[in-house]
Every structure is written in C-alpha cells, then in structure tokens.
Image (cartoon, rainbow, N blue to C red; front, side, top):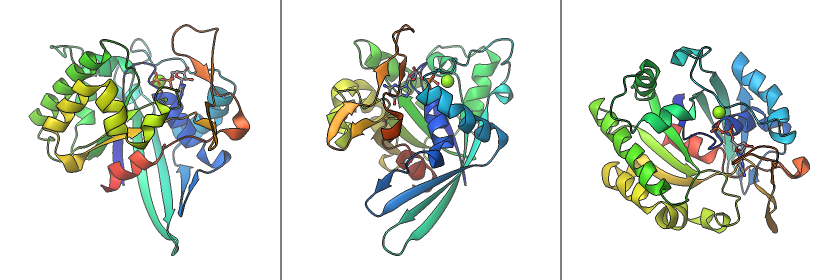
Length: 273
Ligand SMILES: Nc1nc2c(ncn2[C@@H]2O[C@H](COP(=O)(O)OP(=O)(O)O)[C@@H](O)[C@H]2O)c(=O)[nH]1
Ligand SMILES: [Mg+2]
C-alpha cells in the first residue's frame, strides 16, 4: 500500500508512463530472470487510461499536456490513478503485492517549485499533497540534459528538499530519480549504472545536491524508457519522432515489439524500500 507521486517537468513522459502501466497486461509482460509483474488498474480513471493507452502510445495520439486553468483549479481536479501491482519472484514464486496510488501532476507545478513564492494556490496544494505523511515516495522523471538543464533541475531539487524539510519529510520520503526516455542512443548504454553514467555525466550538480541532502537509503537513481528498444540484440530505439509536432513528441515504431524498460522497478522500491 503506498501513495506515490509522479512528478517531473513538462513532456518528461509522465502521462505516457502511467498509460503504459495501466495497459500493462495487454502487451507482453516484461519477463526478467525469475521475476515477473502483473498490473491491475483498480479505479475508473486507471481503467479509462488503459483504454486510451493504445491511442496514446501505439497510434501516437499524444495526450494533451495538463494545463492549469479553467478545468483544473485544485489538485482534486487532476486524475488520480490506482493500481495493484503483483510481483512474482524466484523459484518459489514468492508473491508480493503493492497497491499504488498515483496522481499525474502537470509539469508546470514541478517547474514552479523553484520560484520563490508559491503564491498560486494549486502549487501550494501540490506541495502539501506530495509531502503528506501517507506518501511513501516520489518518482521524479527527468528528461533533459542540454546545457543549462542541470542547473535548473538542481535549483528545483534544492527547493524541493527545503520543502521536504519544512514538512518534516527529509528523513522518511523516498525519492526515485529517473532519466526518462533512456532508449535514446546517447543514454541507453548508461542505463546499466544510471547514477554514475547518466546523472554523474549529464546532471552532476543535480546528483550532488540530492546525494548531499537525502539519506542514502531513501535515494535511488534509475533509467526508464516507456518505449524501449527493438530487441535485446537490437538496441535501436523503438521510437519514431513525430514530425508533425514541435519539440519532443515521439511515438512507438513497432507496437508488436513494445517492451518498456524498467517501468515497475522504481515503483516497487518506492513502496517497499
Ligand atoms: N522517446 C521517448 N519518448 C517518450 C517516451 N515516453 C513518452 N514519450 C513522448 O514524450 C512526449 C511527452 O509525453 P507525455 O507523457 O505527454 O509527458 P508529460 O507532459 O510528462 O505527461 C510525447 O510525445 C511522448 O510520446 C519514451 O519512453 N521515449
Ligand atoms: Mg501529462
């Protein structure tokens, strides 16, 4: 049982990630040596997301970003997803179940963490909700590594850590910090040791800030790709860039070979430690 919040800047892949989770049972289940996962959507919102997932991920009808405005005034207007995740492990088929409740926050609120006055009510609500005692951890999806990004992420993380401290969560909130879309060619080899080869290389200031202030047992670095690569022996990204849209839009290249990378491991760690 755990509430987890999924946060990250705009277009870091949060909604796609949750959609893939909701859709899990419909595509080939990720099988690792001796370990398999099952995911069951538990509420209407997660079931709806599973239905939309096919359009979102396979047909490339990218979801619209969530924007704070008329339809979204408070955090309660945001989608709230609930899943049951079961892991079977080892020869004895030991089963462990976690329940995950996740809110899909708009990227805007993450980006505004670093702004000094959280005057906007939804931002304050977001921070309050995210740092409530019954939240066991946060999955933080980061995606950029172009110049300047490290400094920006570092600022946001610094401020987030201050807010954790103010709410007495510095010692008991787990943070899974992930580089999303890690099938990108330059990043893929770094997935094996993301802390050193992704964060240490591309986001060193962000990594250092987190390492300095978060207790080691509550901090892990991950590489995640909702799209994945074509095959184990064919590391080309299972992705095409969507020319119609500006910026970072992409869609799956071959739906039959769709195998997300490392989607569930961080959630599992966040809820179990
Ligand atoms: N290359 C790549 N693109 C992805 C991945 N996951 C999502 N995207 C794309 O990133 C863009 C933003 O995704 P979205 O889920 O809307 O991001 P959000 O704003 O954080 O919710 C979309 O074009 C997605 O298709 C991934 O694993 N790899
Ligand atoms: Mg979104």
